[in-house]
Length: 290
Image (cartoon, rainbow, N blue to C red; front, side, top):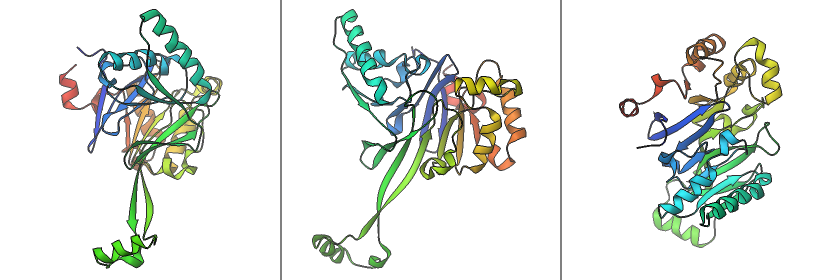
């Protein structure tokens, strides 16, 4: 039996599995991309994903890291790969070492400290790119980007042998093309992410909006989270096809949040929005498994 009841949203051929409630747990897995954004309490359904992209070290986002890595070993899988801010690497390793001593088994892991601007290969023609956020010291977000090469226009119409000949001569006949698939902001104070083209043009944006009530603006600032007063104008400047909202608190019900988003957003933008924990958005298959 699965350890978690996860939201399940399908967008095209991509599946988003996750759970996100502020202060409780946040974990978002995308199996087709082989990435898990944050790890929460390490749901069993996501253990087979090879890459954890950890935005920061808060317990509701990172508590399951040792279980994720240990359970992969238990199931005969390769060591998990964790991309994480540099200031968390040593502490995560200390946690793994302590659990290894308690459990009597070494916990294998590949911990990779990443800074804004870094890129990490996930699959052939698929990379994770790191960008800065404002939450904890060195907190980051991640974009998953498909990379391709296209033939330069001046070489269109050439035959295959002619193209091969030019390549052998060392002629650069192609240029790189990036297709941003998904960007995950993690927990963050307001940043104008529309200035990062690969974030603003990602097909899917996964973004937190933690506070909605007027009286919670100071609370949002204190916790370095986004409030709807900042979040709604930001979404209007973005060019994403789909927007998945995470990290609501128990202070704001899903129906209330949805109504406030409808009031604050243009009809065009509101149509793009899904709230992760809104069961109305979950697939029929997922609802049948609850």
